Length: 228
Image (cartoon, rainbow, N blue to C red; front, side, top):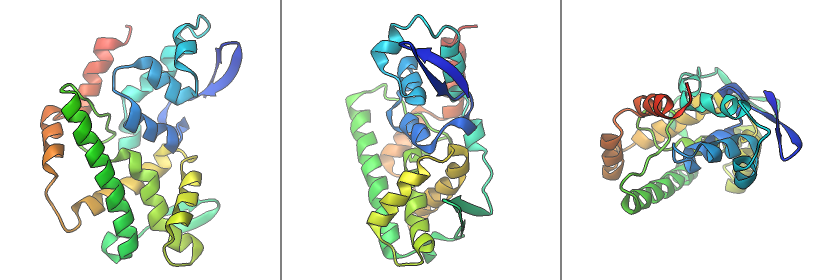
């Protein structure tokens, strides 16, 4: 973390993915257009757009805060833990989503369908629509915290699945480093995406064809946009 000053106020800001919360990372995946650097800075620091735009205090620290976001390898390659630690509890990670309850599976699928619908709408409205992804052609990064909460809640509470309790647990997961949460959430989501249906939805295929390598796109954006 580094200390930055905006509008005369000191605050901490991340300079690598290990220092980014799951909430911040998911907001990047959901809300950032891969172009607006000030918005990216706002997400990572909790600052206001206009105040950052007009700031004369940030200097080179503006670039120190945002440049790592163009290289998601630290998140993409984060190792799957043997157990998931949540609020001091060690939770085992199920190896197959098929062993989870119908209610859990439905909760996650509904969220995934909502993301699909939003992406499809965005792509229709903007022919140049771009989606930030931590892994190539995987479009559900914003749901990793929800997936973890849904899958771990029964084990955490030693009780049947409860969607309201899962939402409460998600609030705690959102505060955790994205490098701890992403590999587990991705595993659950990817398994659920493939469970019972192996083909990628047509509109996701269209996005994938337009962005055959998100990683390559981000590399290009880095060299095109950042100062040298």
